[in-house]
Amino acid sequence: RLHLRIRKIDGRWYCAEVYTSQYTDYGEHRFLIEFDLDNLDQNVVVGLFVYEDDAKEIDIEFSKWGDPNFTDIGSFTVQPWTIPGNTERFPVLTDSLRTTNLFIWKENYVNFYSIIGHHEGLLPSPENYIHQWIYWGNSIPKNSDDLRTHINFWLVQGKSPVDTTNLEIVITKVQLPIETGVKKDRETIPTKISHFNFPNPSSERTTIQFKLSMPDYVKIDIYNLLMQSLN
Image (cartoon, rainbow, N blue to C red; front, side):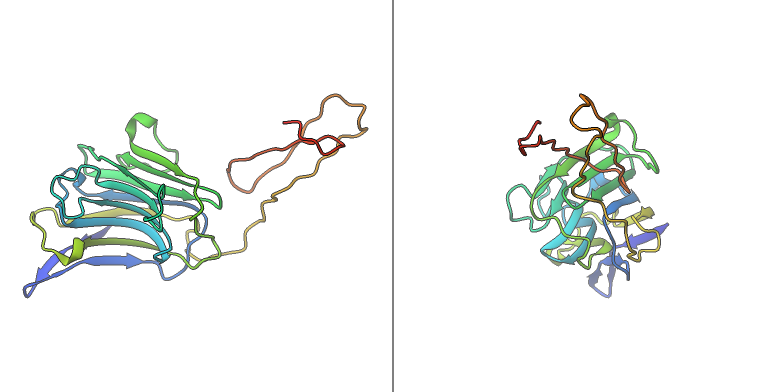
């Protein structure tokens, strides 16, 4: 259990951030936190993310961004956030201190979840979801980029918090794609699989078999001898 606090020392406010020394990789990044999101101060930001620079970053954030009346305090973002479609905002009503927040980072998409309660292993049924979103855009970082996993707890533009009673977050558990946090060689997933049934073309039916090193979306294109699509 990791406790992060925003504290005032000798008249100055100090925020908190931790990050991994090693780079991360494609896969699931899951953060189990304890924090009163329902009473989030207007100037406080909770950030759970992977980062190399401002153009190579995947974020889960909670904040009112200085506006006490702001309601969509949750956000899923693939940076840069200024590109239309790169950010999904949503309201957060949990009635619980415990939430599970995760994203599954793949080459072609990022799947985000924010869920009430703490969950390891299989995800619960959707009625427990605060929000879920899949990003299919063109800004997804590559796993060859040097992204580290970060958690930060900070103040918008360094402004003082209005409510000083909710200035500690507890990180109960963080699950990363590679437990050591060190990149390792991965099995290459083929982008094309050639298959010929035999004898060909006497068979009317065939079974195409393949396997992947991890769960993923698959698209199969089938062509005839004239290279015409049969899909």
